[in-house]
Amino acid sequence: MPKPGDVVTVDFAGATGLKRRPVVVVSSGQYHRERPDVIVAVLTTNVAAATAASD
Image (tube, rainbow, N blue to C red):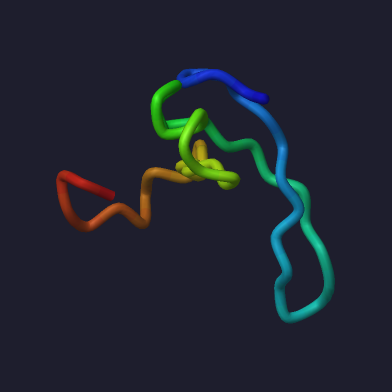
């Protein structure tokens, strides 16, 4: 099971097929003990499209 802060890759379905992207695990250890899923945030180097502080 990945730990909070781990960077892993995930396959995302797109219009032209699957694309592997890096993500960081943001769910906590307690969440992992109680749930069968993991919450992740996608990582990118393309910050030009960011329009808000939370992007």
